[in-house]
Image (cartoon, rainbow, N blue to C red; front, side):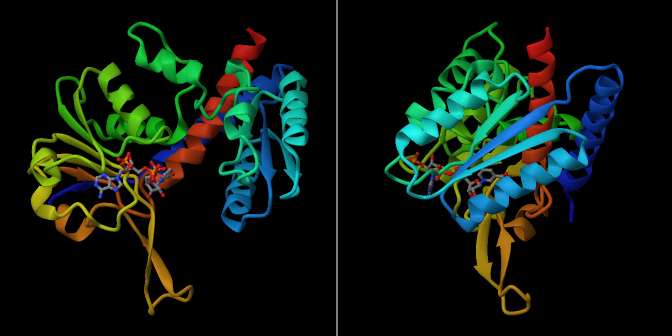
Length: 292
Ligand code: NAP
């Protein structure tokens, strides 16, 4: 292996330790305990697991958490009323509505009820718009792309002036990742399902962020020697040697890419742990903003 492994688990733990220390300082100084409210509509097991892990992280870091679950047949009005109530509750600093919601719920209308100062997911058009404008900082940066940039910075990868390629243009990962790279003075190419020659474009990348959800699609011979590779993909593949019968792999063929890249994140243990760590960081920031 020639690439340096970027250990997301260890870096996420450092972020969590810093957040926990600041939370305890705040509380000891008589300030409010940063509190995250989660809203889950329905009973999707994956969504329930994500919400539970966010609540657990809050507990571990000494933060407050409020978990609100509504049944799958909850009406639009019920979901909106709940979000409005959390929005006006001064003891709640951040609101996270777990997506996707059942198909009869208009997600955009629900999300629009979260004020920018409680939008710890960073998905509101106001936060994304500020991220896209020069000289206008968002209050919150979406957690997964924030984690990607944080990993690059911690690994000492030079972003300024680099050619960066982002695979994927979703609202939650690809597009904000591209905006963050531009804000740090990289030259950015965003690829998607209609991009003509993906391997040729990727070969130009000093920094590659892969977020397409396609099992090990990026091959070793697509990688520029010495590039920094951040693999956001989480894909499940059958594996009879595992108790669960499956294992998780990324969008990049790790075994091939690690022989060419300068830095690389593993899956699991790369970007994954960063997402919740950055959510905790955002929730602390929400409490700080709201008392200012
Ligand atoms: P998404 O909303 O499905 O977006 C996928 C993007 O990839 C789209 O822009 C799509 O292009 C593009 N794409 C799909 N197939 C492609 C192909 N063959 N060639 C080129 N581009 C292609 O996915 P997402 O929510 O951004 O998530 C991406 C991956 O990251 C998934 O594996 C997801 O599980 C993972 N993820 C991980 C974390 C974490 O915490 N680690 C968090 C979020 C997501 P079009 O726009 O043209 O359709």
